[in-house]
Image (cartoon, rainbow, N blue to C red; front, side, top):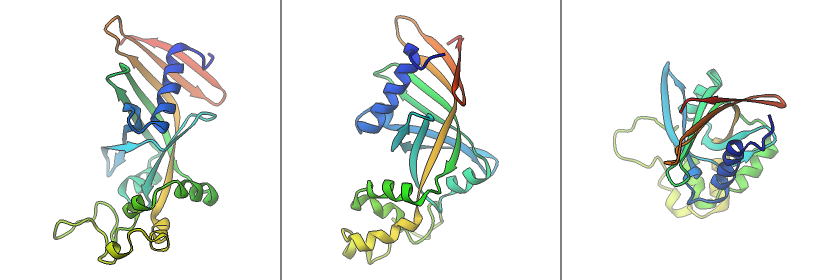
Amino acid sequence: MSTQHPLFSRFLEALREGVSDKSSDFHNFVFSNLTDGRVASRHLVIRDFIEKNFSIIFFSDLRSPKVHSILEEKSTTCVFYSKEAELQIRALTFSRIIKDISLVDSYWESVPIFSRKAYLTLKPPSSKSDEKTDGLSEQYERHANSLSYTSKARKNFCVVENVIRELDLLSLSSKGQSRAKFTIEQASIQMDWLVP
């Protein structure tokens, strides 16, 4: 099957839009994986979409529970939805932490200095605290906009690649719903219509 099928083309356009337009419904998605034997879901931001191998990219703190879970169980799911576009995208993915340091560094350079604080917490994400906290040291406020200070956060930054193996695309038009499954294996894509 060609990637030119109209429903598959809508999927490609949606993820391109999600990367380039922060106001798009497709800019955020729900990522689900197994953590301690339970399904854990959270909203994330799509940072890149690599069309040549159908990969969804997001950023994370290397110390986070989701990253540790991905190292143990690589089968994950990414779900996008837009009420305006009347489209739900459910992608079954194989997730991995990118190890190519130059590639990770190039993504790091795209993170604004003020956003790097997310990777500067003293303890790993999800750590318990005795009081309300942002997790940052007291020094942070004095050095918040210092490139040299925020560069310390780089060691906690990682890039997660989610390679799509299967897509379930549901078009929710009031004029008639349609649903299709696309199975992606190496260079071939198999399409099957499904009942919505």
